[in-house]
Length: 264
Image 1: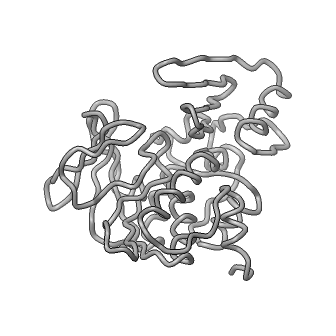
Image 2 (image 1 turned 90 degrees about the horizontal axis):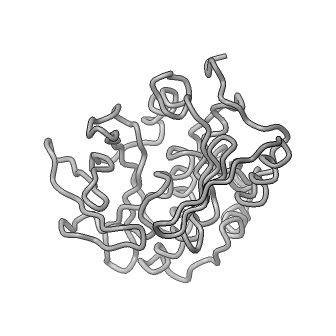
Image 3 (image 1 turned 45 degrees about the vertical axis):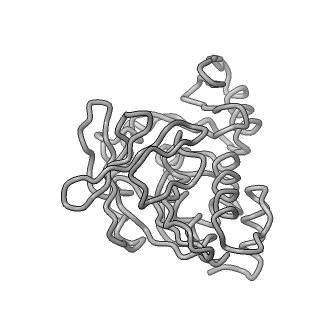
């Protein structure tokens, strides 16, 4: 499935070095490097590319093809790397809250429970939720957890689930029971094909930066620094392709466009 040097190649891809120990400090650094290097993007949906939830395929896409992905891909590949580095990783399923506070489909999001070798945690790790926490969150903590991206809090929800909020706004409802990667295939299929999924209705490519965030939404480049937001319309295909390359490291042959029928 992998060659012998795949983990080192993955670390090179995200600009990180192999940690000496699988501890909380190393985990924090790896999450930060991943979020600031590998973009959150849904381009495969509109480029007609299949999404296969297998470690080898996911790692190849991120490391060899130097692409990004959405939650199932990013957290799936990151889980493979963390396990190779000595962390204990469990897949967790979540339902995402929409802007109206309504819950989305089961398995609508994949997150990770990570245990370290230093006795801390367990940690909620997530490199696949777009604009999210830069640092791992303590899964057993019910008070406020401060992060450069906001104040996060986990609260007990019905049936033993946990609701995660950011600055008071609900993000997703997390089921703490362990899952297998294959369990998420239906959720990935839904987001890749359903007209009800926001991933089929728009193009997005986004990456955390040192100062804030860089996002390419269709033909608009959005730069966010603190509370300041600047939008730059891109007129030509060459400008769009240059933006994908220069800001996200994506070398695309053609400009992605929203597919009218994602099942075609």
